[in-house]
Length: 392
Image 1 (cartoon, rainbow, N blue to C red):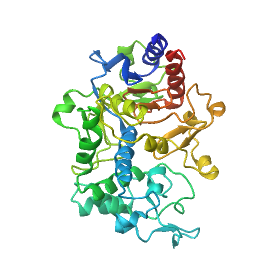
Image 2 (cartoon, rainbow, N blue to C red; image 1 turned 45 degrees about the vertical axis):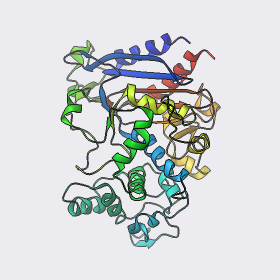
Image 3 (cartoon, rainbow, N blue to C red; image 1 turned 30 degrees about the vertical axis):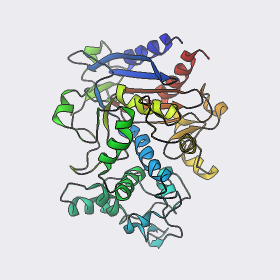
Image 4 (tube, rainbow, N blue to C red; image 1 turned 90 degrees about the vertical axis):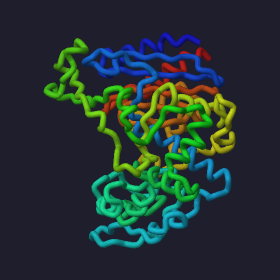
């Protein structure tokens, strides 16, 4: 194996637009490569490294579905159980008709719909349900109470008919909390992170974490927002710019809200251990098993119909379907991917990306820390370069 091409690719990204990036790669249950390029803070020129904390946003989702599937393996639920069995507020749901009238849905939301983003929920944080949640929790946004309040909002389609990226996995986290009887963050720590040897992961920004947090930026093509191009030696014209964000710029809803959809703050070197466990058919490098081999295979089975696949049309995911909360490769020709059929993972809003291939026992976790992460450019290229480095 020669990871020089991956190193060179990451250097090209930081020379182009990304402030800094890191990656950890595992093959056959061993870490075989780690590398960082660029800066954790462009202005101070602090180097990026794999131990810096970052907001991984939606890369939180794979850990959430692992937590839920552990309970599935133990017989606590079936995929087609109605959500209302666990959160009763979802018993009667409505959609808006063409005339704006509320119409009762024909089918209940199931737990499968939560896993697969087919429940009819949205990512709108300013709905009546969200406003109610802030009121009834006094702003603390308790995980289960927030999920229950979302039931006040009309769905955007009949459950199970379409795919829409949404707060489904935040609600799934609430289901884990209801079934386990533990705060969601506590359950994940004890049953997912600790068995993998992950010690640096939190759903909340503490003062200690903030000291070790890589600066977060957003990328904007408007030259007037380019506050750090001088430090990078870039020209404004044609390149856009980086806007420095506050450390508090996270998906933070309240002190008691553990966001299963986008809440984690962690490090590349730590979260890569979860990717490795999944690539190793559910067994972590520690020897602890977090999922069975069969459940990992179920996780990466495409769950979408032809109609739903038309909704799942992000350019960086051509040739992919959607499994139980992850992209999964179903068409190599359409995707142009060098990976195996069934390779799976997900990405985050600031440039985190998890790749898992159990057939090759190969995984990586990559991240930069920039909103508007240019994912349609870097993700397909990253996957192809990484596979080429395996030399298979």
